Image (tube, rainbow, N blue to C red):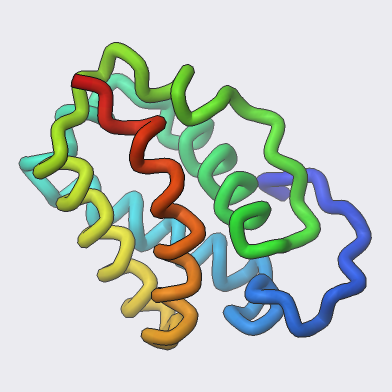
Length: 128
């Protein structure tokens, strides 16, 4: 399992509504495939350990959608400092994530909820 889980008593959470951990795992796998095929953002990931990225992103995403996972990785600032991510590449990465959400059947309403939650991280990722 990609993340340690904690008890979750909120059955109406976004986590439950999107299909829980199986959907998150499929989403992250689709996102990784999108990145691998994208010449614009792939350079940011070339030196990444794919398994480490996958496990960390699953755990982080799970916490973002109020799932029972506990993210124990580095902060978004620590991860992205020095990567010199610009706004265009950030936006392209978001497009790849949206495409992955569509591929795994996450509804537009749920996608908007997820993107609203992730939006606060933008300032921690773009460092120019």
